[in-house]
Length: 393
Length: 225
Image: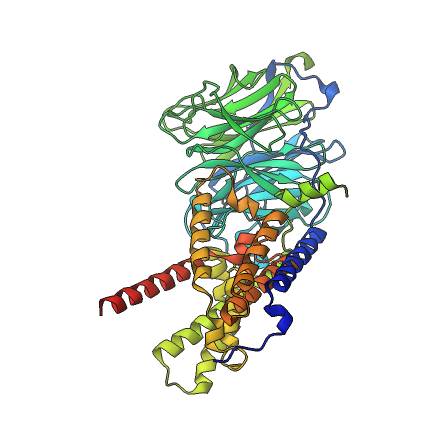
């Protein structure tokens, strides 16, 4: 086959080199022009107003079961989202519910704690896998582990595990955004934004569970994890509008999952992790530069029966942890307190049962001057408790 | 923008630009339509080479139409569930494969043969990314795919065959094709916003390895005889 004749100048190596450099520079310029500015230095913010002054002693004030949607005998993995004072609800709870875990009919349910009536509103489904799949253009096999966050404009974002071909280990993180800015719980609806691009292998096996750490720029850091065979934690950064701003691997140990972030100061954060190894200990990693680099640190010395935990740093030197303290069972759920995230002291037992009882997957939030806890109760319902600082009563 | 900020922006993997949800959805359907049509054409040529030309095009066209059909009746809906969207490079290659019978003079088979080292580079990159998925490397290679600096490096690398091989057509065309893919990625951010996802997907990686093995076997048998 005859070669296509080229312009004589392109036959020279020097000319080709200049052409190649010009092409690269043009591509790079076009690329940089399309990108958002570099985000601000990541600095965490405390979730509790300074005048709220929580104390280390907490006493139960109220509790019970969050109402379930009709005909849903199974519920798991709740997440709480505090709402601002002007909202009719103190906080929202999200969880997945259906006929059983991983069933095709599982959807993401939500309820709101009404400020005036001091009770939970009837639950309703807010994310359905068929509808989300139709909007995305591809199918979702099952849904789970919702995590909620409010962006700088007050819009709620949901991050939900949506599986592809396979079980939970084939999960992907589906990012959904509130359809409008309305504050009425009955109108709360979400639309899919995208599946977060987190791995090359068909974007498989990244999941979420714990609540995000809010940042001073209005964005947040969302803890996530990989769990196909090897299990390792990842921190995902989002800007004030909820746009994905990158990912950082938090540890190379292959048995750590479901990281929970705890702020020690603006840039010094600790992550406590569920342990999938035979040792059944709570693990820890730390960053001192706002999540850009992470390193393994000594364990806090607590048992972990390969179960999710929830942690919340209320103010400097005051951290709370909801966890299953026994190495082989989820029958006890404790609330512990710490000043540094390393040494923990049991504050009270939130729930306790016998034998195969399960009180697990807790979530913590601070709203209306109280600590709120939600957790899975026997995989059938979501229980909640409200605890007040002792000096408030 | 001062020099320090510019340098940070260049090197940072914290400024990804992702495709809009609408573009992403359109790409999912169209890319699978092209891939399925190309697969249909390839299978027909392989298993029924003597069929009537009209029929030969009916099957790929039917597959493409089926893929753009909305909802669960479309194969793209289920392929997306399992594999998300194919890479830009796979989509462009399938598009060229479909186009070639129409423009045999412009796209003869000889000029579409990529130099062997492109296949090797694809296979090696795939292995690096696969191992990175399982956190084997101390730094996340996948996250680097969001960095502008990596785009610049890859753009230089894809120009190398043309630079070194000069006007020889296969090398020049391979450089041209990959540069076009990079330009599409920069403009549309497909398929995910990550550069590696635009250049290589696991299916293309497997195809490259199978092709490599086939060539190796052929050479081995040729050497024996």
